[in-house]
Image 1 (cartoon, helix red, strand yellow):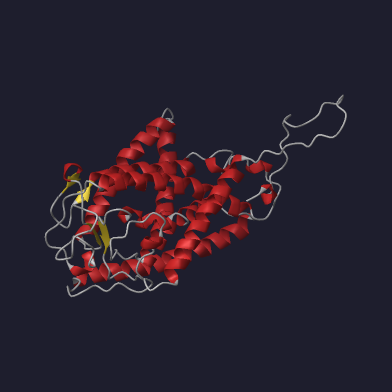
Image 2 (image 1 turned 45 degrees about the vertical axis):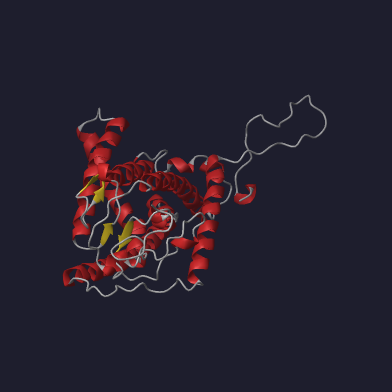
Length: 347
């Protein structure tokens, strides 16, 4: 993005001449923070487009079967029900966004949050970038995964499928709904305890979401929707079973990453602006402001997730505990699991 994005000229003194100066001096224009972030967001969008296009036009763009092991009936019921909920929820959210935009004459901030998070969905596969440690149930509607087309991916052979409908709703719908609920909860808490400051709110949310993430992951794992197939024994619970769960995932993604993203919405400024909207008043465009806001927010969240997955993969190099009996609909021939060949780059 160039300065033609629409930023207004900086009114500061840099590059200006005094009344006594003679000659012509070109006044420098400094882009506001939101424009710089939007440019970075556009780079991430370009990377996503590259990854998705390569995936869609490859042989890898095909459903991954469940294999010889039969998926339990209750698991199939939950999966299909969740996919219906995802479809209805996403359609409803789009209708709401259109209605709210027409009513208010501008794209809602919650919509910026929703679309910005959706533009980070491509990183979800990053959990397996170096070592295959996580797998969705292949009974989900899937067309394989784009993982192998992400730059820097370590090839391990077969990968876990990406559940298209579930991931779409997870990033676009479920998280924003949680944010709306937490926003109302925080407002109620601050009304009751006026001395409750931002630091107290953040600490409380970190603890709450650590518990919520661990509990919800355990519940859904036990229904057979997914499994952490390799974990570090020291920092995990229920090791050696399909229900094993790495507590470091609960701490850093379920708690730190989630709460960090929520803070952007909870602590809005100037009425209804995200922190990533800094400098928005200097934009001279009237149309396309929502796109700039979405790109700016998505840039920050993409960076946060990239740092998280980098750290997660470093820990995964020491993930040495795997269940002994993994059904085919969960291991999908991934290396080193069940009777599958060992991973070539692992000892």
